[in-house]
Length: 469
Image 1 (cartoon, rainbow, N blue to C red):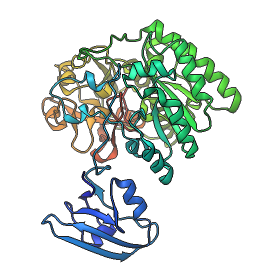
Image 2: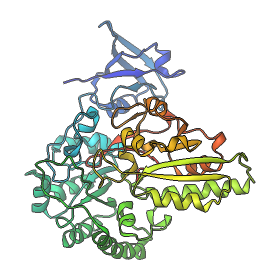
Image 3: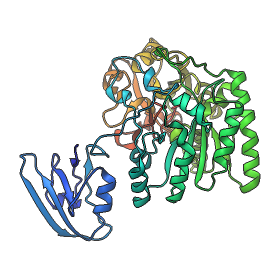
């Protein structure tokens, strides 16, 4: 088992640079402690007197001894946050998105992560089914809080059935262990029509709400189904009618909870509102958006950012470039009407907008979010349009950070070269406003301004990404 951290980058001015560490060096031990992950590094490095064993790329080992301030960090970026390998999921869930990924896509899309460390570090949801006593002991020792837990349902037998795991019925006792360790947690339910909805959803909501204050929030997201599901449990997508029933059902608990303490606690993903045609809740209903990375409140957050940018521009009496411009706005089909309404609200006389809602032929038309669009589907929808517009806006959430690669391994550079006009990425509502109101001076989101996370059962999503709906 690998028990070292391999350095990827050494930032200028860091303690690591002062020690003359370089990319490729391996941190083997700190004060005699072997390292499993960056959590160990952080706690071991809290000492003011440090002995650090390093192995250089030529195989030579060197012991560094130095004093440091209590809060001074090494400052390096490691190749991976976990050194001994990500703990993979042992379940075979009915709804697993990984089992529905198209063949021959990038390897990261086929990772089934169920690692409590990734939950603490990046907000990834875990089922707890592979947890043992020493894991809970370490969580308590380091106080790894909050964690993010995939509940799915609190009925023990149904949970075993849905996760297809014989230990899945231990959820409630495992939550008790977290609470005994003074660990808070956010929860998620992947809602499957005619399976864990209806009365089962009522039971799950009531059980988790009763565990406050350790239970911090609950997100309910609809199961995602692609055309690549094979040999899987038969599941049905939500339609407008069934989505409306979920909204009505959950709203009762939201009203009750807000009357009790002013918090909503339980949140529905945007898809339920967009699919049912119901209005999105106001921003205050999201309580600061604790599960934004899980797609909860993305549309409302986007709207608020857009409005704020417009208000600030008005206060500053900002004057955009007066040249007429024609823009095409690319998005998933679910969010396109909302983007059109926002664009129209600006009443920009010299800006002509063409909406390009892209049908997801790659994963299947039922997958309607922008974050899962491929370059090929976008290019197919843009065929001929690029010759009629001055610029194209695409969702930055469809790109992998750092190297700007789409899900189908097409680079952003190659994508742009396939088109005859300027292409810019857009992340949040602020960017969308600026792109529309001042296109000639707008530049898209840089590669370093967003960070990807792997979210169990929710595919590759991007923190804070625009148009992930």
